[in-house]
Length: 447
Ligand code: EPZ
Image 1 (cartoon, rainbow, N blue to C red):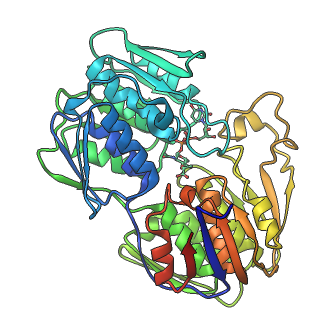
Image 2 (cartoon, rainbow, N blue to C red; image 1 turned 45 degrees about the vertical axis):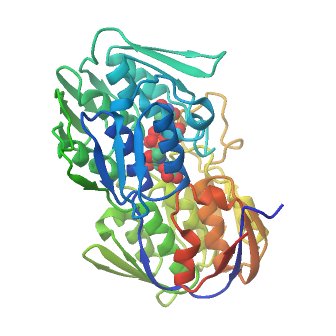
Image 3 (tube, protein in one colour; image 1 turned 30 degrees about the vertical axis):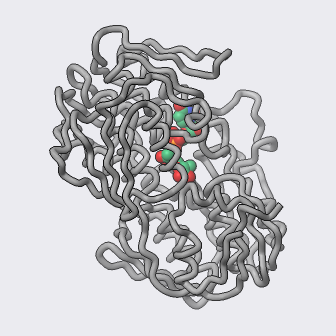
């Protein structure tokens, strides 16, 4: 089965400019946040990617208006919201569908939302979100016969709350902000996540009348009666994960790529690691350039929440480390299922083995919920990558979005013609990926 595939003839250094698209992990949230507004919302720099199409379909089924222009401009109008049940088929495809709790409860006082989907990179439960919802005066329970969470307001409106996450959660922090911004009173969220995408969402809401103040891991939200765009257009930030992916395309193919639309400080942990590995990185206002130095050295990576080295970057980084001199380590602490690409890279000749990193207290150390009987041998969280291996071509399958980016980078670095099956999974998070790669000189075509 080779439809829904890319054919890539690798081994060529990729050179040129990449114009970043808008951030997937901001655009999904500002669209849902727009349904809280009292007037139509005008967004810009929204990428044409599959997850956005899914989300806009969900919004329309709920009765909202969504008009997407080719030039990445999007009009969202939630005034027609009348349906309180999120579609099971589409809702279970994307993880952020549970964020509809905020506009549905705000407008209709109730919500039925299917257990969320998204990439299969671990269990990804929403126990912390559900725990947090209850603190905002919301009654919520999981109906195992339907697979839906049923939620309803206990009173007339959402009441402000003080809540501290025992472990940080990116979308959990965002859902808390959406619930609190129009609640009655002042809410304080502690141990909030620090990802810059959250601050872009906060900027969007504050520009429209919300009162949200971040002080490190504490966010104070004073509920307001109205949130209005007043026809101002809000342009979201560009995608950090896309920037890192193309930087690694440059380094893994021995090329030279200039990435436009993002400042280096947004991916500082990656730039530090790249420089540590011997890469040449030039940073200017809102752009950066990556190329190889004299030699590529092995590294040790521990993934962490922002400002650490992001979990979304470790797959493509693993491809780069197959080319480095020496043995590298990647220790994944955010998700328990983020190494699906390892067996794919082995097909190209990569030498990678799992090992037990010997964590003393895994329940505390890892950001995912440690299942009491989960042993490290079952779900190994660390790999050793033996460098200096020439990659050859192969037939690769894509299991999740970032593993898809990983095998695409590997196919561009490998000699010969490779097949990457699952192009549509890559389309979930990368806009115009083959066009952008062709501009860099890649020999890639979609079938
Ligand atoms: C967001 O996922 C991003 N997705 C992810 O990007 C990103 O990798 C992640 O944040 C970390 O930055 C979107 O923004 C749509 P978490 P999120 O809640 O919010 C566990 C991509 O490829 N957890 O911070 O789901 C969870 O399973 C995606 O663009 C619970 O156990 O991440 C994970 O192991 C992949 N229970 C860890 O915590 C909960 O209730 C951190 O998850 C919530 C989370």
